Length: 367
Image (cartoon, rainbow, N blue to C red; front, side, top):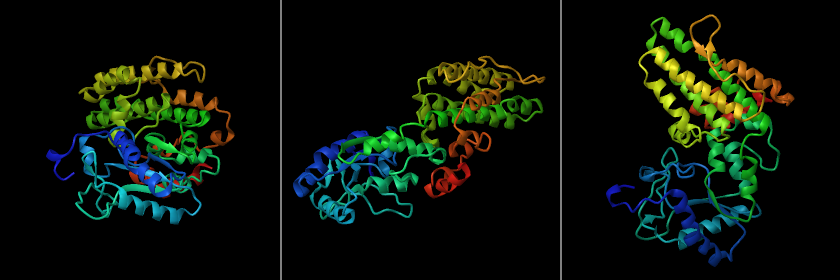
């Protein structure tokens, strides 16, 4: 909002959305249309959807808002009629916040906008369930999900579509969301294998770079290893990881975080290789313990050893990855090209991960 000093008390966006629906939107639907079949909730974009919003979040795409789903039959006409009714009947403010939003800027961003008269312009998206999921992840909800779908869905989008809240559901949104709740077992195992392999591919390099005096290289690799360990922890707890802005915050909410996080911070803060190695090795051993607790395969070694004949201690993540892959029976997964993993493991590029038109084209690679 333009003047934070005069802003009303912060209300978490999910709570505000549910209040907005029950106190303002639902009565309009009942009075104007006799309570038509619909689904309402808050999913999709926004830090509020994943419960990570705060007062700073109010400066854009935040406020009394929701997604309103209508039946596919006569959708275009229903959409226009419902939105027009909301513009006419919604109050101009709700619990101190404007219900109107500015016109989208070039990037599609809208901000709360005070209006003293005229129609309100609410941030209420009116959609069909099928159309919404087709746009968000290029999935036709009428067909079953395949391996290539799971491996090309943005993990953050999966989080945003399964988090949030559903305030009313005549049309079956929750049933659709349950299909996306988490990766099927053998897809999950494959991602775990790729996560361990990613650690194994670079874990000895932290020491090797330091050995030749490449301090910046050793620190950079340490940061990469920390990120790989964190993502592996999300996988082991069967939680979708948010994108980079909220990755650390989401990680801190994992059950394993209090145990492993001090070691990750220690590795990042260390000014010499031996201290980095000590912290990283402890983190690797915690991951091995956590993985063994999943009881997916025979227990893997839980202690670091030297990297062949070199003086660098490693957990041998690649060997763990190979053992997991050997336990997967799905022939489609076993035919995949190496340990590429999902799009989130393949690339950190926002343009690769976040844009559905890109990830959808990658499905051919995973077929």
